[in-house]
Image 1: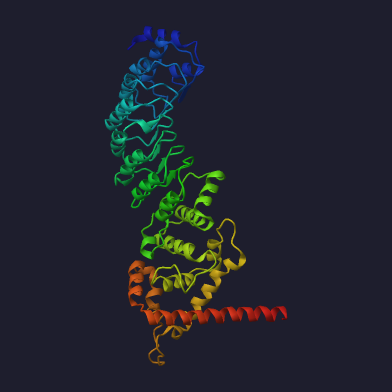
Image 2 (image 1 turned 90 degrees about the horizontal axis):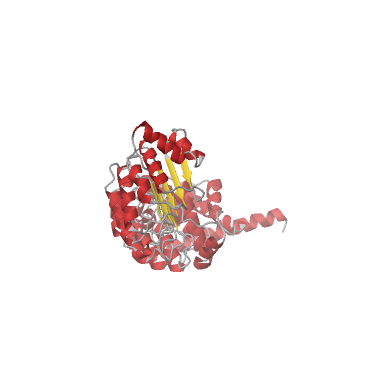
Length: 461
């Protein structure tokens, strides 16, 4: 390295004629140094810049793009820097493994480094292994963001990189856009998403050849993941109905209340920008299922209570597209009385706002579904004998009974919903269930008749 005042003067003479940002860097007057194709430095100048940066204490951001750069000369000195936090290479050729090796000491030794971007740098198999080793051997666990876009990593074995990233316990954002990522690479990424040590909040996979099977691999890996918020899949045009259904089932599995409760309540962003991509999802899934997917993601983003999420997802899945069917319903056995009780716990205004989130908007008649169910619940709550299997004397009817246990239903906030649903399912028998459905249908008919009668009276008919 160059040392002493005479050497400093030499560096100044070499670099002073270049960009003002370099001059400010030499004088510790800048925090961000950006160099691009307009910066014409020879090898000696790059070496001088590396030496200056080795002792510089002001620059925290180094951004070099589309330069004819001899990496080895720059990093001969830069490897000793301890203040750069954000490091970005764009369009710098790193295909040769020797170039990545010259970069590796800086990546490993800088304990301040939190943000690394190596985009469109022609990284290949040998180089990615060197990068993985550098990240694995970091002296401090400070890395939070790693962007490796546009490097055609689909030809590489990502096992080593994923293993290295598993040791980066503070990594919150990983971007692998436009890299030829497919099923094999998603299998590696699934290992990272399954890791309990992973702190990853965002995974960007835009513009890759990810298909339905690859999406299913990612969805399975997120079943128990409670950290990832963003899984950006924009531009993966091979995903069809099967793939989007795996995501829908991940965030809103309505096969039972237990399944809804165990759905992923964390993921809320698929990177689907308005326009063609959302239209493609609607085309693949159909309007109702696409809206259920979008609504579930919106609920994950805005609602922090697992109990409330379970309730609202069940309501969205079964009550927002025209009404709950009591006969031949797709609602799981034992869940109907619980869902009715949930309607009774929501204000009309809050529930109406919830169920109107639909594109295209629901008709007024369908929005009123909630109000009818709310009325039905209140009638049954106040007249529990309507749902008794056999007539009871006044002395016997002291505790309300809706499908055997409305008292338990009213306490659903403090009890395990899944256990209650299973208990109700076991308690229902064929004859009793049919009898109850008939009685409820009679109540519905009575409510609708009263509504029609009152409407007719108001209109003078």
